[in-house]
Image 1: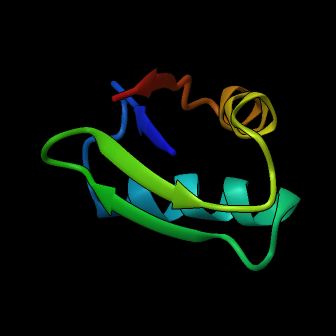
Image 2: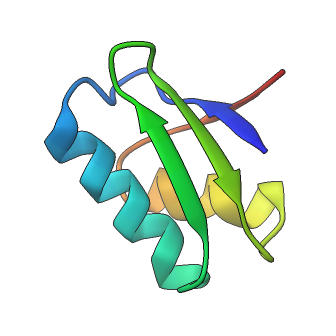
Length: 65
């Protein structure tokens, strides 16, 4: 699953995004590209769960192709 995270602008943001996703799925694989503001997630959680976790962490995400 790919998401656009507009306010992920640095490595610290990428770590926070990764931590938020791993709170709901500790085995999730998150590849973050802060410069592009994109994340690619492999997880047992679905897109809605990931979006909700990111919203709660202060990083609203939009599903991306």
